[in-house]
Length: 433
Image (cartoon, rainbow, N blue to C red; front, top):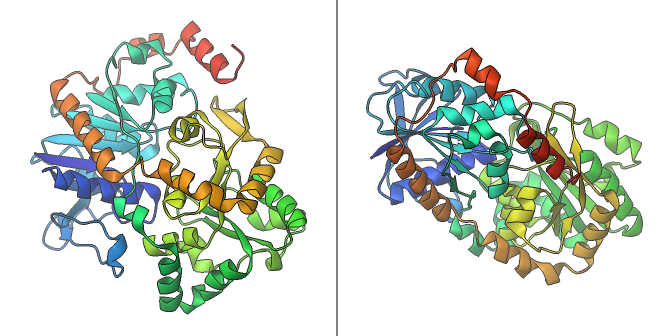
């Protein structure tokens, strides 16, 4: 069976890019042929509209084992190419690219499967509509499923769904963090100061996009407090702007908190501008003692899982999603649900609890390494692919049940009327019920 995976480009230095690559490799192992359709890829090459290749990967210990070369095409062909059996669309359904893909694919007679994610505890009604453009849906967690299914018009059409958590390659659980620091620092002398700082200081780290949903002000404010109490602590801050630009003025925040270059581990500027290759990301994780990851909302939260797999203790905000994944993990940080101006329900991190748990993780790191790693071991790429295979089967079974775009305006108006079920879902998410 040939799957058209419409998502981020595999190998792109983003969480979605990596997940597309890992999912492709694991679906190949399950016997599927996969064509990757992604934005930014040329619609036509010199001789063909698809490119087949094996990714260059100098550190074989972190490379996915592909059964076949990657096959990549432009998303311009999504739901038009005739040799695809099932279309698999992944990402935020109401995102600019994903909404376009779903609108196009909803008019295709072939099965369409959607792998959906969101960061809000309740999706506003209009933004929930795109999940109806697929024959079958999988969500990254039950919490994400609840966010979409808060609306009666969604529940009317989605009576079955798959829960398919993101997953990391199994070999990441076996990687040696000392080896990673050694080989990367040797290959890139500009990174040697990071490895040296790990030996001399207690390192609190952050790595991720400089994005509105990442609570960088909470990170910097609580680190300033930790630094005051533990002077031998430094911050390894990698907030990348290679996807979507900068949401937070990091320099202004540092200045307002009285933090200077001497308080930070030096990071090459190309990391924040261009993004990190995978081995560099693993090097960053391995150069932290503690990952501090305050967040307003997560669709899954891949960064803490990756860090934990490498033996770095993560401290991060409790949201419905992170609570579902991490259970009773003792370093979840208290939060308060907040209704934002766009109708999203997100989570404000408790600064004092974040500071205290950062201190606890620094002072008693060995106590939490195995606990965190045991959680990470539950979320592997092969397990993700098996659930996505179930999604593909469900899409085939339900073929023809998707609603073509555009939906009749009268029908849409009826669906989007304020409802009691929507009100109760938001109030429950805000702890007001």
